[in-house]
Amino acid sequence: MRRGSFAGSSRLMDLKREKFLEYGGTSWGLSRETLISPLLTSDSRRCRPGALFVAKQGHTAHGEAYVQDAIRRGAAAVISEKALPGIATLVVPSVEYFEESVLPRLYDESLSKMKLIGVTGTKGKTTTAFFFYEAALKEGKAAAYIGTVGVYTKEGFLKRTLLTTPDIYELYALLEQLADLGHSLCVLEVSSHALDQGRIRGLRFQGAGFTNLSWDHLDYHHSMETYFDTKRKLFTSYNEGTSVINCDDPWGRRLRSSLESRQVLCFGQKNGDVRFRKKGEGGDTLLTLSDGGAVRLGMPGEFNAYNAILAALLLKAAGSRSKEWSMGFNGVPGRLERLDGHGVDIYIDYAHSPDSLDKVLSLLAGEKRGRLITVFGCTGDRDRGKRPEMAKIASRFSDFVIITSDDPHSEDPFQICREVEAGMKSDFPYEVVVDREEAIRTALKKARNGDMVLIAGKGHERFQIFDGYEIPFNDREVVERLLKKRRTCGED
Image 1 (cartoon, rainbow, N blue to C red):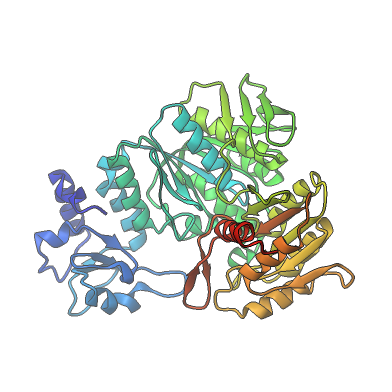
Image 2 (cartoon, rainbow, N blue to C red):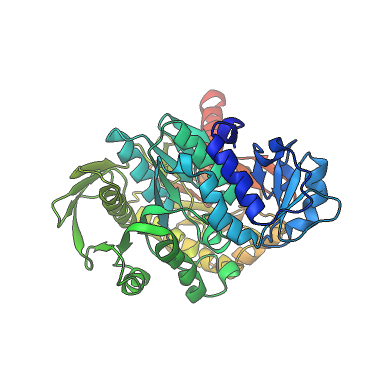
């Protein structure tokens, strides 16, 4: 949070002080400066002098275990559900209630200036939200985007994000900053983890979109039912505007039937209040809507047509008066991002689940002239059941597969590759190259004029994550560097 954000409003300072007092803060001895701290955080590593550290239950540990670390780093006080001996503590009935009821009021002056639009679903969140963001800018709106590929302002890229939906305290501070910079509209990707962990608690959306639901994150949610119920929260607990739902997706139809008393707009080619038709393929498709609207789409793929229509209907829900939109001609970072390999078409895509890999590969296989070479891996500390399944999908559509590392996290990357390899047919041509850069180099060497190369799994990401550390790594930059080296040095 910016240092001036509390100090700039005496009303906010008074409100903050009154609310903390109302909740029975103990061990007060706190200075006025502490009560208008420039930083609220539940991550002790982010604490600096004057910060307020929120000791809350995390996914794997409770914040109370990190109180001393927060104090060492300069935290002036701790917000907790109980008094902590010898530490200045602001006691609240529950951290959840603090986040739901107090936090929004502390930021109300800024957040009231900006409409929030949320997009959720298994696949298509990033593309839909980015389509929305770019189309809103074209209409002259002061729009921002927060999601998987980072934070974008009306001026362009601002910074990367570690999570699709940031931590609640980081998110509130970021929204305040965007509002104070003059943004009147912000589209957010809302992940199921964020909904389950309360990262958007207290926020109110003026529109929300649902893309689809498929097998993903079941290592976390354990069942599709739980996964669906978590996604549904965006529409039942946070959205105050129109819910726009893809009703060609069976889970979308189920979501629609559960929101009977709310403002809902369904769409699809076969189902929904608004139907759309496609004319043309590839990089220039015309999508016409039954309500008279139209979208010119510059990215291939059936799924991108759904993403574009959802973005257009969310724009209308946000107040757009346009009837025609142009989307996807600038691409979306890490989403079927095409590079020219001098006779070889190279695609970078974030596909990291069976469903997304199936969709991307089936699309490319239908357009290939030569061979299709696929490079992919699977993330560590995630659902292990999808590893052999993704290998089966890769071998079904590809002519050659290279199995490599994604983000191993705490797992042995060699073991991950072995588990992926278990899904490959014995007579199918493939290699295991654990080092990701070497795997990409191998694919480019094998590719001949007219071939396609798909590098899947990491898309826009700029780091590769290992056990306790990360290294700079971006698939696009690696490809560009290898192609440049080939041109200048004549390497194969």
